Image 1 (spheres, rainbow, N blue to C red):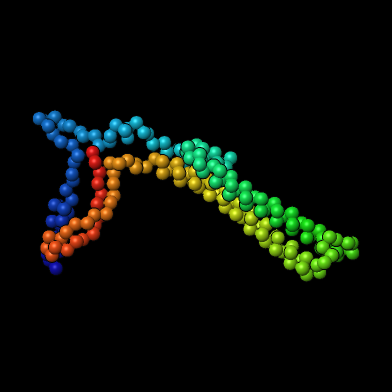
Image 2 (image 1 turned 30 degrees about the horizontal axis):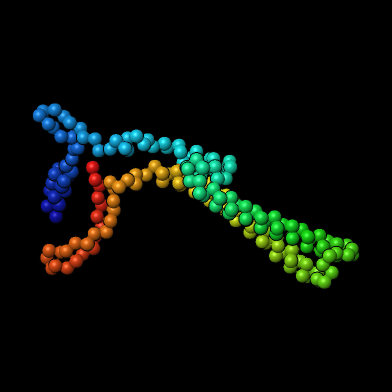
Length: 189
């Protein structure tokens, strides 16, 4: 038990050595630059993701155009447009059955004379539920449009050059000559 403080003191003294990336060449301090010329030209704009999200919030698809992902714009308008179409269709049918039910309660003739009152109420509930669900899907696609523009702008700033690779690696164990599986992280300067 007495040895524990000595081991801790030894680890604190010698276990936390720092490494420096500078080298001394003929008495002069030389600092090596690890960023290539291609990466220097490409500056990171931290406001680009928020700008893309703002553009998509104002006009759906404008954030995708800002990110230069023009192929996503028809998908955005197709998703939002189709869900809006179903919302409008279900809303019209809901009002049609609701008006027919109101006319039936007032004793006036309606266009659904072949349906009884319970069927009219069921049709109202069915189209109301579908209308509300279509509205939720429309709002979901609108929010997804904003999130997609934001995430895409973030991902455009990541380094995905050929100098950086992460690949599986098979190697043979020297002790028992069995093949082992590992992962290899390579960075070319």
